Image 1: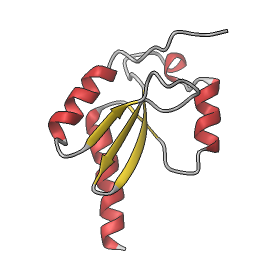
Image 2: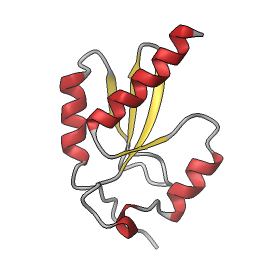
Image 3: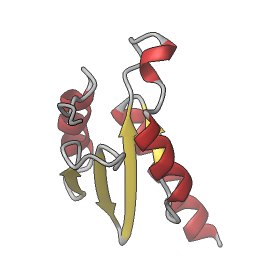
Image 4: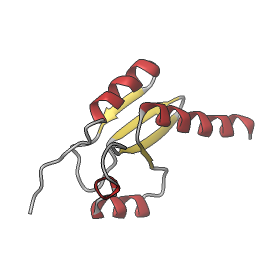
Length: 103
């Protein structure tokens, strides 16, 4: 059985904001890929970041990961992060790049 790929209501706004806040970043929308693959891939200063976008305005039951997303998140050997806003994504990248620069 096949299901239509849906994005959260805040998905487009987050991608637009990220392109504004991080114009040097490479951002690819992966939301149509299926198979539990996260919504966006962001390349920044040599790093690659996967983000699953969830809408904080939805009830918790509607923000939970699908079975395919759970399978991807638990089997992926790289990083993947759940995000609710562009600011949260920027903060996550800042934490990671700060750790890398101080090590």
